[in-house]
Image (cartoon, rainbow over all chains, first blue to last red; front, side, top):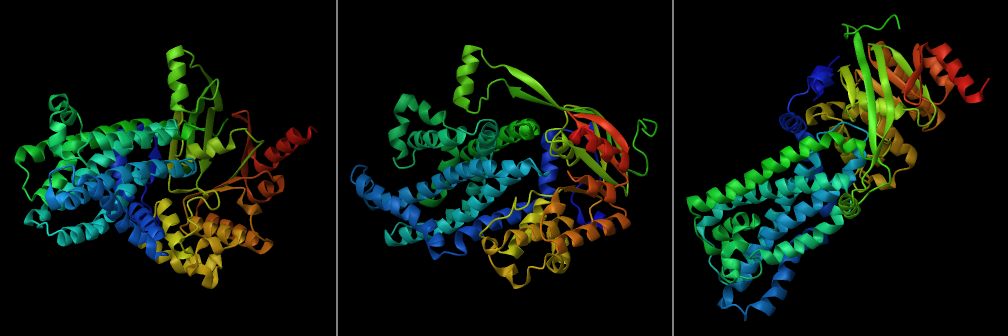
Length: 279
Length: 255
Protein backbone atom coordinates (compact mmCIF):
# COMPACT_ATOMS: atom_id res chain seq x y z
CA UNK A 1 0.00 0.00 0.00
CA UNK A 2 1.36 3.40 -0.89
CA UNK A 3 -1.20 5.40 0.99
CA UNK A 4 1.40 6.89 3.28
CA UNK A 5 3.02 8.75 0.42
CA UNK A 6 -0.13 9.97 -1.31
CA UNK A 7 -2.44 10.99 1.49
CA UNK A 8 -2.23 14.42 2.99
CA UNK A 9 -4.15 13.57 6.09
CA UNK A 10 -2.70 12.23 9.29
CA UNK A 11 -3.17 8.46 9.44
CA UNK A 12 -4.82 8.31 12.80
CA UNK A 13 -7.55 10.74 13.65
CA UNK A 14 -8.63 10.85 17.25
CA UNK A 15 -11.26 13.38 18.23
CA UNK A 16 -10.13 13.23 21.86
CA UNK A 17 -6.68 14.52 20.92
CA UNK A 18 -7.43 17.71 18.99
CA UNK A 19 -5.20 20.67 19.59
CA UNK A 20 -5.80 24.38 19.16
CA UNK A 21 -8.21 24.88 16.25
CA UNK A 22 -6.45 27.92 14.75
CA UNK A 23 -3.07 26.17 14.60
CA UNK A 24 -4.62 22.90 13.43
CA UNK A 25 -6.27 24.78 10.55
CA UNK A 26 -2.98 26.43 9.60
CA UNK A 27 -1.37 22.99 9.28
CA UNK A 28 -4.31 21.65 7.30
CA UNK A 29 -4.16 24.53 4.84
CA UNK A 30 -0.48 23.99 4.20
CA UNK A 31 -1.13 20.28 3.60
CA UNK A 32 -3.93 21.18 1.20
CA UNK A 33 -1.94 23.80 -0.73
CA UNK A 34 -2.47 21.90 -3.98
CA UNK A 35 -6.22 22.28 -3.47
CA UNK A 36 -5.84 26.04 -3.06
CA UNK A 37 -3.80 26.11 -6.24
CA UNK A 38 -6.51 24.12 -8.08
CA UNK A 39 -9.26 26.42 -6.80
CA UNK A 40 -7.38 29.51 -7.97
CA UNK A 41 -6.74 27.81 -11.28
CA UNK A 42 -10.42 26.97 -11.64
CA UNK A 43 -11.47 30.57 -11.00
CA UNK A 44 -8.90 32.01 -13.40
CA UNK A 45 -9.58 29.42 -16.11
CA UNK A 46 -13.37 29.68 -15.99
CA UNK A 47 -13.09 33.44 -16.12
CA UNK A 48 -10.54 33.82 -18.89
CA UNK A 49 -10.10 30.65 -20.85
CA UNK A 50 -13.23 30.60 -22.93
CA UNK A 51 -13.76 34.28 -23.44
CA UNK A 52 -11.57 37.06 -24.70
CA UNK A 53 -13.95 39.47 -23.02
CA UNK A 54 -13.18 37.93 -19.65
CA UNK A 55 -9.62 39.15 -19.64
CA UNK A 56 -10.57 42.43 -21.25
CA UNK A 57 -13.29 42.98 -18.69
CA UNK A 58 -10.79 42.86 -15.84
CA UNK A 59 -9.00 45.71 -17.53
CA UNK A 60 -11.98 47.60 -18.90
CA UNK A 61 -13.83 47.71 -15.59
CA UNK A 62 -11.42 50.05 -13.76
CA UNK A 63 -10.81 51.96 -17.00
CA UNK A 64 -14.51 52.65 -17.50
CA UNK A 65 -15.11 53.72 -13.94
CA UNK A 66 -12.01 55.87 -14.06
CA UNK A 67 -13.22 57.58 -17.21
CA UNK A 68 -16.62 58.44 -15.75
CA UNK A 69 -15.18 59.66 -12.46
CA UNK A 70 -12.52 61.68 -14.25
CA UNK A 71 -15.08 63.52 -16.34
CA UNK A 72 -17.18 64.31 -13.28
CA UNK A 73 -14.58 65.07 -10.64
CA UNK A 74 -11.38 66.30 -12.26
CA UNK A 75 -12.70 69.88 -12.44
CA UNK A 76 -13.89 69.75 -8.86
CA UNK A 77 -10.59 68.86 -7.25
CA UNK A 78 -7.60 70.97 -8.03
CA UNK A 79 -5.50 68.15 -9.40
CA UNK A 80 -4.86 69.24 -12.96
CA UNK A 81 -4.16 66.28 -15.22
CA UNK A 82 -3.29 63.77 -12.54
CA UNK A 83 -6.79 62.87 -11.43
CA UNK A 84 -7.19 59.86 -13.82
CA UNK A 85 -3.94 58.36 -12.51
CA UNK A 86 -4.99 59.06 -8.94
CA UNK A 87 -8.40 57.50 -9.34
CA UNK A 88 -7.27 54.37 -11.18
CA UNK A 89 -4.65 53.67 -8.50
CA UNK A 90 -7.24 53.90 -5.75
CA UNK A 91 -9.86 51.98 -7.70
CA UNK A 92 -7.58 49.01 -8.30
CA UNK A 93 -6.70 48.82 -4.63
CA UNK A 94 -10.36 49.19 -3.70
CA UNK A 95 -11.48 46.57 -6.23
CA UNK A 96 -8.92 44.15 -4.85
CA UNK A 97 -10.44 44.54 -1.40
CA UNK A 98 -14.12 44.74 -2.31
CA UNK A 99 -14.15 42.01 -4.97
CA UNK A 100 -12.22 39.47 -2.91
CA UNK A 101 -14.33 40.00 0.21
CA UNK A 102 -17.60 39.70 -1.77
CA UNK A 103 -16.33 36.70 -3.73
CA UNK A 104 -15.29 34.86 -0.60
CA UNK A 105 -18.84 35.10 0.72
CA UNK A 106 -20.10 33.42 -2.44
CA UNK A 107 -17.34 30.81 -2.25
CA UNK A 108 -18.49 30.06 1.27
CA UNK A 109 -22.10 29.60 0.14
CA UNK A 110 -20.93 27.36 -2.71
CA UNK A 111 -18.62 25.39 -0.45
CA UNK A 112 -21.17 24.78 2.26
CA UNK A 113 -22.56 21.78 0.37
CA UNK A 114 -19.07 20.30 0.16
CA UNK A 115 -18.38 20.94 3.83
CA UNK A 116 -21.35 18.74 4.57
CA UNK A 117 -20.01 15.78 2.62
CA UNK A 118 -16.21 15.78 2.91
CA UNK A 119 -13.53 17.00 5.27
CA UNK A 120 -11.65 20.03 3.99
CA UNK A 121 -9.78 22.82 5.71
CA UNK A 122 -12.64 25.27 6.00
CA UNK A 123 -10.48 28.31 5.28
CA UNK A 124 -9.28 26.96 1.92
CA UNK A 125 -12.04 28.54 -0.18
CA UNK A 126 -11.51 31.96 1.34
CA UNK A 127 -7.73 31.74 1.02
CA UNK A 128 -8.12 30.69 -2.64
CA UNK A 129 -10.44 33.63 -3.34
CA UNK A 130 -7.84 36.07 -2.06
CA UNK A 131 -5.27 34.33 -4.28
CA UNK A 132 -7.51 34.77 -7.31
CA UNK A 133 -7.96 38.44 -6.44
CA UNK A 134 -4.21 38.87 -6.26
CA UNK A 135 -3.80 37.59 -9.82
CA UNK A 136 -6.69 39.69 -11.11
CA UNK A 137 -5.11 42.75 -9.52
CA UNK A 138 -1.82 42.02 -11.23
CA UNK A 139 -3.70 41.96 -14.56
CA UNK A 140 -5.39 45.25 -13.71
CA UNK A 141 -1.96 46.87 -13.46
CA UNK A 142 -1.80 46.83 -17.26
CA UNK A 143 -4.48 49.55 -17.69
CA UNK A 144 -3.00 51.39 -14.71
CA UNK A 145 0.39 51.70 -16.35
CA UNK A 146 -1.34 52.62 -19.61
CA UNK A 147 -3.14 55.54 -17.95
CA UNK A 148 0.06 56.75 -16.30
CA UNK A 149 1.77 56.76 -19.69
CA UNK A 150 -1.11 58.47 -21.53
CA UNK A 151 -1.60 61.21 -18.93
CA UNK A 152 2.18 61.61 -18.57
CA UNK A 153 2.15 61.05 -14.84
CA UNK A 154 5.62 59.79 -13.90
CA UNK A 155 5.98 56.20 -12.67
CA UNK A 156 8.32 56.10 -9.72
CA UNK A 157 10.85 53.53 -8.63
CA UNK A 158 8.77 53.08 -5.47
CA UNK A 159 6.54 50.78 -7.55
CA UNK A 160 8.90 47.96 -6.57
CA UNK A 161 7.27 48.18 -3.12
CA UNK A 162 3.91 47.35 -4.70
CA UNK A 163 4.03 43.58 -3.98
CA UNK A 164 4.53 44.35 -0.29
CA UNK A 165 1.57 46.73 -0.21
CA UNK A 166 -0.56 44.18 -2.10
CA UNK A 167 0.28 41.57 0.51
CA UNK A 168 -0.98 43.95 3.20
CA UNK A 169 -4.27 44.55 1.34
CA UNK A 170 -4.57 40.78 0.84
CA UNK A 171 -4.00 40.08 4.54
CA UNK A 172 -6.60 42.66 5.53
CA UNK A 173 -9.09 41.34 2.96
CA UNK A 174 -8.53 37.78 4.19
CA UNK A 175 -9.19 38.80 7.78
CA UNK A 176 -12.40 40.63 6.88
CA UNK A 177 -13.49 37.76 4.59
CA UNK A 178 -13.06 35.21 7.37
CA UNK A 179 -15.13 37.27 9.80
CA UNK A 180 -17.87 37.82 7.21
CA UNK A 181 -17.84 34.17 6.06
CA UNK A 182 -18.44 33.01 9.60
CA UNK A 183 -21.56 35.15 9.75
CA UNK A 184 -22.66 33.99 6.29
CA UNK A 185 -22.37 30.34 7.34
CA UNK A 186 -24.99 30.98 10.00
CA UNK A 187 -27.01 33.72 8.35
CA UNK A 188 -26.99 33.65 4.54
CA UNK A 189 -28.64 37.08 4.36
CA UNK A 190 -25.37 38.71 5.46
CA UNK A 191 -24.20 38.12 1.88
CA UNK A 192 -27.04 40.36 0.71
CA UNK A 193 -26.33 43.08 3.24
CA UNK A 194 -22.63 43.26 2.49
CA UNK A 195 -22.87 45.29 -0.77
CA UNK A 196 -24.63 48.04 1.18
CA UNK A 197 -21.85 48.07 3.74
CA UNK A 198 -19.29 48.13 0.92
CA UNK A 199 -20.85 51.18 -0.71
CA UNK A 200 -20.77 53.06 2.58
CA UNK A 201 -17.20 51.93 3.23
CA UNK A 202 -16.07 53.18 -0.16
CA UNK A 203 -17.36 56.68 0.46
CA UNK A 204 -15.91 56.73 3.98
CA UNK A 205 -12.46 55.94 2.57
CA UNK A 206 -10.49 58.32 0.34
CA UNK A 207 -10.96 56.39 -2.89
CA UNK A 208 -12.53 58.79 -5.35
CA UNK A 209 -12.17 61.93 -3.25
CA UNK A 210 -8.69 63.08 -2.18
CA UNK A 211 -7.54 62.53 1.38
CA UNK A 212 -7.37 66.28 2.19
CA UNK A 213 -11.17 66.54 2.17
CA UNK A 214 -11.46 63.77 4.78
CA UNK A 215 -8.89 65.10 7.24
CA UNK A 216 -11.30 67.88 8.21
CA UNK A 217 -14.24 65.56 8.94
CA UNK A 218 -14.79 64.89 12.68
CA UNK A 219 -11.36 66.31 13.42
CA UNK A 220 -9.71 63.54 11.39
CA UNK A 221 -11.30 60.76 13.44
CA UNK A 222 -13.22 59.44 10.45
CA UNK A 223 -9.93 58.36 8.91
CA UNK A 224 -8.33 57.26 12.15
CA UNK A 225 -11.19 54.87 12.88
CA UNK A 226 -11.21 53.38 9.39
CA UNK A 227 -8.95 50.30 9.43
CA UNK A 228 -8.93 50.06 5.64
CA UNK A 229 -7.48 53.56 5.20
CA UNK A 230 -3.85 53.03 6.37
CA UNK A 231 -3.66 49.75 4.42
CA UNK A 232 -4.97 51.08 1.14
CA UNK A 233 -3.02 54.33 1.53
CA UNK A 234 0.32 52.50 1.25
CA UNK A 235 -0.80 51.22 -2.17
CA UNK A 236 -1.42 54.79 -3.34
CA UNK A 237 1.79 56.16 -1.80
CA UNK A 238 4.05 53.74 -3.66
CA UNK A 239 2.33 54.05 -7.04
CA UNK A 240 0.80 57.49 -7.37
CA UNK A 241 2.67 59.66 -4.86
CA UNK A 242 5.98 57.93 -5.53
CA UNK A 243 6.91 58.11 -1.87
CA UNK A 244 8.54 55.50 0.28
CA UNK A 245 6.15 55.13 3.22
CA UNK A 246 7.67 55.98 6.58
CA UNK A 247 8.37 53.30 9.13
CA UNK A 248 5.36 54.47 11.13
CA UNK A 249 3.10 54.22 8.06
CA UNK A 250 4.31 50.69 7.33
CA UNK A 251 3.94 49.80 11.00
CA UNK A 252 0.35 50.97 11.30
CA UNK A 253 -0.70 49.34 8.01
CA UNK A 254 1.00 46.05 8.83
CA UNK A 255 -0.36 46.08 12.38
CA UNK A 256 -3.93 46.67 11.18
CA UNK A 257 -3.72 44.13 8.32
CA UNK A 258 -2.05 41.33 10.24
CA UNK A 259 -4.12 42.04 13.36
CA UNK A 260 -7.34 41.77 11.34
CA UNK A 261 -6.07 38.58 9.76
CA UNK A 262 -5.31 37.06 13.16
CA UNK A 263 -8.65 38.02 14.65
CA UNK A 264 -10.46 36.70 11.57
CA UNK A 265 -8.50 33.43 11.55
CA UNK A 266 -9.14 32.70 15.23
CA UNK A 267 -12.81 33.71 15.07
CA UNK A 268 -13.43 31.59 11.96
CA UNK A 269 -11.64 28.48 13.20
CA UNK A 270 -13.38 28.58 16.57
CA UNK A 271 -16.78 28.76 14.91
CA UNK A 272 -16.15 26.51 11.91
CA UNK A 273 -16.61 23.33 13.97
CA UNK A 274 -20.32 23.92 14.03
CA UNK A 275 -20.69 24.85 10.32
CA UNK A 276 -21.78 21.32 9.43
CA UNK A 277 -24.45 21.45 12.11
CA UNK A 278 -26.32 24.16 10.26
CA UNK A 279 -28.78 22.55 7.94
CA UNK B 1 -21.58 -6.55 23.42
CA UNK B 2 -18.84 -9.07 24.08
CA UNK B 3 -16.43 -7.98 21.36
CA UNK B 4 -16.39 -4.34 22.41
CA UNK B 5 -13.10 -3.17 23.85
CA UNK B 6 -12.61 0.19 25.57
CA UNK B 7 -9.54 1.10 23.50
CA UNK B 8 -8.81 0.72 19.76
CA UNK B 9 -6.68 -2.33 18.97
CA UNK B 10 -3.96 -2.94 16.41
CA UNK B 11 -6.36 -4.18 13.77
CA UNK B 12 -9.04 -1.55 14.41
CA UNK B 13 -10.10 0.68 11.54
CA UNK B 14 -13.02 2.54 13.08
CA UNK B 15 -13.67 2.97 16.76
CA UNK B 16 -16.52 5.01 18.18
CA UNK B 17 -17.20 5.24 21.85
CA UNK B 18 -20.28 6.89 23.30
CA UNK B 19 -20.77 9.08 20.25
CA UNK B 20 -23.78 11.36 20.28
CA UNK B 21 -24.68 14.06 17.83
CA UNK B 22 -27.11 16.63 19.02
CA UNK B 23 -28.40 19.20 16.57
CA UNK B 24 -29.51 22.38 18.26
CA UNK B 25 -32.33 23.60 16.12
CA UNK B 26 -34.16 26.82 16.66
CA UNK B 27 -37.81 26.08 17.46
CA UNK B 28 -38.85 28.30 14.62
CA UNK B 29 -36.45 28.41 11.72
CA UNK B 30 -34.44 31.62 12.01
CA UNK B 31 -32.50 31.82 8.81
CA UNK B 32 -31.58 35.47 8.62
CA UNK B 33 -29.52 37.76 10.78
CA UNK B 34 -32.27 40.37 10.70
CA UNK B 35 -34.81 37.92 12.10
CA UNK B 36 -32.30 36.65 14.64
CA UNK B 37 -31.59 40.16 15.91
CA UNK B 38 -35.29 40.91 16.25
CA UNK B 39 -35.80 37.72 18.21
CA UNK B 40 -32.81 38.32 20.46
CA UNK B 41 -34.19 41.73 21.33
CA UNK B 42 -37.60 40.21 21.97
CA UNK B 43 -35.98 37.38 23.93
CA UNK B 44 -37.65 34.83 21.74
CA UNK B 45 -34.80 32.61 20.58
CA UNK B 46 -35.59 29.13 21.77
CA UNK B 47 -33.94 25.93 20.75
CA UNK B 48 -34.93 22.35 20.95
CA UNK B 49 -32.31 19.69 20.64
CA UNK B 50 -32.56 16.80 18.27
CA UNK B 51 -30.45 13.71 18.87
CA UNK B 52 -29.42 12.35 15.48
CA UNK B 53 -27.12 9.80 17.11
CA UNK B 54 -27.40 8.52 20.64
CA UNK B 55 -24.49 6.96 22.52
CA UNK B 56 -23.10 4.92 19.63
CA UNK B 57 -20.36 2.36 20.28
CA UNK B 58 -18.90 0.89 17.13
CA UNK B 59 -15.90 -1.21 16.37
CA UNK B 60 -14.96 -2.11 12.80
CA UNK B 61 -11.92 -4.22 12.03
CA UNK B 62 -9.54 -3.49 9.20
CA UNK B 63 -10.59 -5.32 6.04
CA UNK B 64 -14.22 -5.72 6.95
CA UNK B 65 -17.08 -4.89 4.64
CA UNK B 66 -19.53 -3.46 7.07
CA UNK B 67 -23.13 -2.72 6.19
CA UNK B 68 -25.25 0.09 7.56
CA UNK B 69 -29.02 -0.27 7.38
CA UNK B 70 -31.75 1.98 8.56
CA UNK B 71 -34.80 3.84 7.45
CA UNK B 72 -34.68 7.41 6.20
CA UNK B 73 -33.79 9.72 9.06
CA UNK B 74 -32.44 6.93 11.24
CA UNK B 75 -29.04 8.63 11.45
CA UNK B 76 -27.10 6.80 8.72
CA UNK B 77 -25.77 9.95 7.06
CA UNK B 78 -24.91 11.53 10.39
CA UNK B 79 -22.91 8.42 11.32
CA UNK B 80 -21.00 8.59 8.03
CA UNK B 81 -20.33 12.30 8.55
CA UNK B 82 -18.87 11.63 11.98
CA UNK B 83 -16.61 8.91 10.56
CA UNK B 84 -15.45 11.09 7.68
CA UNK B 85 -14.61 14.04 10.02
CA UNK B 86 -17.24 16.31 8.51
CA UNK B 87 -19.13 16.50 11.77
CA UNK B 88 -17.46 16.75 15.14
CA UNK B 89 -19.68 14.84 17.58
CA UNK B 90 -21.30 16.60 20.51
CA UNK B 91 -20.16 13.86 22.85
CA UNK B 92 -17.94 10.82 22.65
CA UNK B 93 -14.73 9.81 20.97
CA UNK B 94 -14.08 9.09 17.32
CA UNK B 95 -10.93 7.19 16.44
CA UNK B 96 -10.14 6.44 12.81
CA UNK B 97 -7.07 4.68 11.50
CA UNK B 98 -6.38 5.47 7.88
CA UNK B 99 -7.56 7.61 5.04
CA UNK B 100 -11.30 7.82 4.61
CA UNK B 101 -12.52 8.27 1.08
CA UNK B 102 -16.12 9.33 1.18
CA UNK B 103 -18.21 9.36 -1.95
CA UNK B 104 -18.85 12.88 -2.99
CA UNK B 105 -22.44 13.29 -3.87
CA UNK B 106 -22.14 12.67 -7.56
CA UNK B 107 -21.21 15.90 -9.27
CA UNK B 108 -20.50 17.86 -6.08
CA UNK B 109 -17.28 19.76 -6.51
CA UNK B 110 -17.34 19.36 -10.25
CA UNK B 111 -17.43 22.49 -12.35
CA UNK B 112 -19.44 22.30 -15.59
CA UNK B 113 -17.16 24.68 -17.51
CA UNK B 114 -13.95 22.79 -16.76
CA UNK B 115 -12.87 19.81 -18.81
CA UNK B 116 -13.03 16.29 -17.47
CA UNK B 117 -9.28 16.36 -16.94
CA UNK B 118 -9.40 19.65 -15.04
CA UNK B 119 -12.23 18.30 -12.94
CA UNK B 120 -10.19 15.22 -12.06
CA UNK B 121 -7.50 17.49 -10.66
CA UNK B 122 -9.98 19.69 -8.81
CA UNK B 123 -11.92 16.78 -7.37
CA UNK B 124 -8.85 14.84 -6.33
CA UNK B 125 -7.37 17.83 -4.52
CA UNK B 126 -10.73 18.30 -2.78
CA UNK B 127 -10.32 14.73 -1.58
CA UNK B 128 -6.95 15.66 -0.14
CA UNK B 129 -4.45 14.33 -2.67
CA UNK B 130 -1.32 16.11 -3.79
CA UNK B 131 -0.61 17.12 -7.36
CA UNK B 132 2.16 14.56 -7.64
CA UNK B 133 -0.07 11.77 -6.44
CA UNK B 134 -2.78 12.79 -8.91
CA UNK B 135 -0.49 12.80 -11.93
CA UNK B 136 0.58 9.26 -11.11
CA UNK B 137 -3.03 8.07 -11.04
CA UNK B 138 -4.34 9.83 -14.15
CA UNK B 139 -3.96 6.84 -16.55
CA UNK B 140 -5.73 4.55 -14.14
CA UNK B 141 -8.59 7.02 -13.57
CA UNK B 142 -9.04 7.49 -17.31
CA UNK B 143 -9.02 3.76 -17.92
CA UNK B 144 -11.63 3.10 -15.29
CA UNK B 145 -13.94 6.01 -16.11
CA UNK B 146 -14.14 5.18 -19.84
CA UNK B 147 -14.68 8.78 -20.88
CA UNK B 148 -12.51 8.49 -23.98
CA UNK B 149 -11.84 11.60 -26.03
CA UNK B 150 -14.43 13.55 -24.08
CA UNK B 151 -11.89 13.99 -21.31
CA UNK B 152 -10.77 17.29 -22.87
CA UNK B 153 -14.34 18.54 -23.33
CA UNK B 154 -16.18 20.64 -20.75
CA UNK B 155 -18.09 18.62 -18.19
CA UNK B 156 -21.41 20.19 -19.22
CA UNK B 157 -21.26 18.10 -22.41
CA UNK B 158 -21.18 14.86 -20.41
CA UNK B 159 -24.08 12.52 -19.77
CA UNK B 160 -25.02 11.95 -16.16
CA UNK B 161 -23.63 8.43 -16.37
CA UNK B 162 -20.26 9.79 -17.49
CA UNK B 163 -20.21 12.27 -14.61
CA UNK B 164 -21.01 9.47 -12.18
CA UNK B 165 -18.27 7.25 -13.61
CA UNK B 166 -15.74 10.05 -13.41
CA UNK B 167 -16.72 10.81 -9.80
CA UNK B 168 -16.48 7.18 -8.77
CA UNK B 169 -13.16 6.69 -10.56
CA UNK B 170 -11.54 9.65 -8.84
CA UNK B 171 -12.91 8.72 -5.43
CA UNK B 172 -11.74 5.12 -5.62
CA UNK B 173 -8.44 5.59 -7.44
CA UNK B 174 -6.44 5.72 -4.24
CA UNK B 175 -7.28 2.50 -2.45
CA UNK B 176 -8.45 4.28 0.66
CA UNK B 177 -8.04 2.54 3.98
CA UNK B 178 -11.72 3.16 4.60
CA UNK B 179 -14.14 3.44 1.72
CA UNK B 180 -17.60 4.84 2.30
CA UNK B 181 -20.17 3.82 -0.29
CA UNK B 182 -23.52 5.50 0.05
CA UNK B 183 -26.09 4.02 -2.35
CA UNK B 184 -23.75 4.31 -5.32
CA UNK B 185 -24.28 0.84 -6.64
CA UNK B 186 -27.60 1.93 -8.07
CA UNK B 187 -25.91 4.51 -10.30
CA UNK B 188 -24.94 3.67 -13.84
CA UNK B 189 -25.68 0.73 -16.08
CA UNK B 190 -25.34 -2.94 -15.21
CA UNK B 191 -21.81 -3.21 -16.59
CA UNK B 192 -20.59 -0.32 -14.48
CA UNK B 193 -22.30 -1.67 -11.37
CA UNK B 194 -20.45 -4.92 -11.92
CA UNK B 195 -17.17 -3.02 -12.20
CA UNK B 196 -17.88 -1.17 -8.97
CA UNK B 197 -18.59 -4.41 -7.17
CA UNK B 198 -15.36 -5.90 -8.48
CA UNK B 199 -13.38 -2.88 -7.39
CA UNK B 200 -14.85 -3.13 -3.91
CA UNK B 201 -13.84 -6.75 -3.67
CA UNK B 202 -10.31 -5.92 -4.80
CA UNK B 203 -10.15 -3.17 -2.15
CA UNK B 204 -11.11 -5.70 0.41
CA UNK B 205 -8.37 -8.04 -0.73
CA UNK B 206 -5.82 -5.26 -0.38
CA UNK B 207 -6.97 -4.76 3.20
CA UNK B 208 -9.36 -1.81 2.92
CA UNK B 209 -12.36 -1.42 5.15
CA UNK B 210 -15.64 -0.72 3.40
CA UNK B 211 -18.70 0.95 4.89
CA UNK B 212 -21.67 0.20 2.70
CA UNK B 213 -24.91 2.08 3.13
CA UNK B 214 -27.79 0.68 1.18
CA UNK B 215 -31.51 0.19 1.30
CA UNK B 216 -31.11 -3.06 -0.52
CA UNK B 217 -31.14 -5.98 1.89
CA UNK B 218 -29.79 -8.24 -0.86
CA UNK B 219 -26.72 -6.06 -1.45
CA UNK B 220 -25.89 -5.96 2.25
CA UNK B 221 -26.40 -9.70 2.64
CA UNK B 222 -24.26 -10.64 -0.35
CA UNK B 223 -21.35 -8.25 0.28
CA UNK B 224 -21.05 -7.72 4.03
CA UNK B 225 -19.98 -9.90 6.91
CA UNK B 226 -21.35 -7.72 9.66
CA UNK B 227 -23.94 -4.98 9.66
CA UNK B 228 -25.59 -2.44 11.86
CA UNK B 229 -29.23 -1.41 12.02
CA UNK B 230 -29.96 2.14 13.09
CA UNK B 231 -33.31 3.35 14.34
CA UNK B 232 -33.94 6.84 15.72
CA UNK B 233 -30.21 7.35 16.25
CA UNK B 234 -29.79 4.20 18.32
CA UNK B 235 -28.19 0.91 17.42
CA UNK B 236 -31.10 -1.49 17.16
CA UNK B 237 -29.06 -4.48 16.09
CA UNK B 238 -25.42 -5.18 15.34
CA UNK B 239 -23.96 -8.48 14.25
CA UNK B 240 -23.82 -10.87 11.28
CA UNK B 241 -25.16 -9.23 8.13
CA UNK B 242 -27.71 -12.00 7.54
CA UNK B 243 -29.41 -11.53 10.90
CA UNK B 244 -29.34 -7.75 10.78
CA UNK B 245 -30.85 -7.66 7.31
CA UNK B 246 -33.63 -9.99 8.39
CA UNK B 247 -34.39 -7.70 11.30
CA UNK B 248 -34.42 -4.73 8.92
CA UNK B 249 -36.73 -6.58 6.60
CA UNK B 250 -39.12 -7.26 9.48
CA UNK B 251 -38.89 -3.65 10.61
CA UNK B 252 -39.96 -2.38 7.21
CA UNK B 253 -42.52 -4.98 6.25
CA UNK B 254 -43.69 -5.63 9.80
CA UNK B 255 -43.46 -9.38 9.56
